[in-house]
Image 1: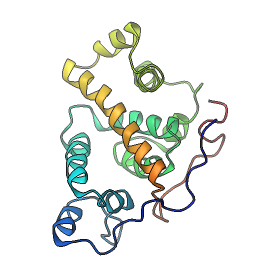
Image 2: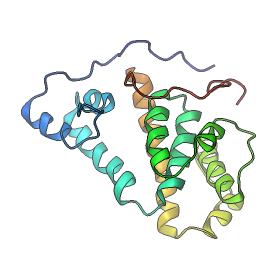
Image 3: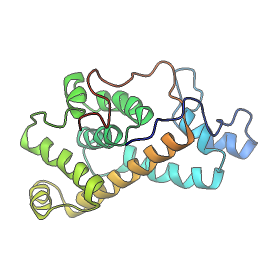
Image 4: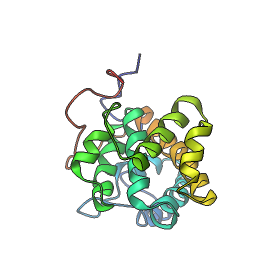
Length: 193
């Protein structure tokens, strides 16, 4: 049975950071007013870790070899399967910019939804890594027909990174910014999946 997520932050976001932390936060994503996102202000409670987290997260978003649309399809599946509304909301916006339609984004939350074979393989890969900490030979072979070894390594680490981020967000009770979208209609994560 899944836990009920914290209604309030368990770790309060930094409000008045030290100058070094302010400099690090200035390099992170912010809301429409330029305020660093709650994930980063919460992680700023551990500045050394935040610095390293941002390097890897930034790599996936700006320097990775996976196409952005495919990356976001996988991240959204991880967010949904992890029950992380914060991660889901942020990546709905990023996914739209990467070319995912609203209909595709909503279908990510439907385990039995029909997908083109290439997208189905990516979603299956995310599910397999989350469920089995591995990929089946069949899924690997299907992906290897489309992606380079570098991209395959990136894909597996991508799933793990965003699962880790979801655990951090859920466990610390990071609250999503008010202007972000919520879950799609239908069953919530863990209900009928």
